[in-house]
Image (tube, rainbow, N blue to C red):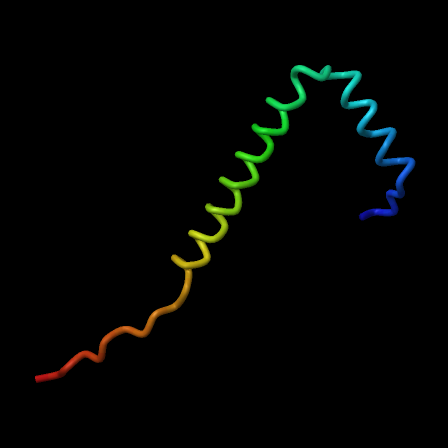
Amino acid sequence: MAGLGGPEIILIVLFILLMFGGKKLPELMRGLGRGMKEFKDAKDGTSEETEVKEAPAIKEN
């Protein structure tokens, strides 16, 4: 986790609480979760579309 330990994470959480407040934090986290879900869905959807599929054989007359 990029060298982050317990004290650093606690300081980050306290800073976020001070910046956004306790009432705004659930809404912020909800939006972050939705964004991550949309990103995951988009990533999974594009990987299926880019798979190479075998083309049917062409019959020559």
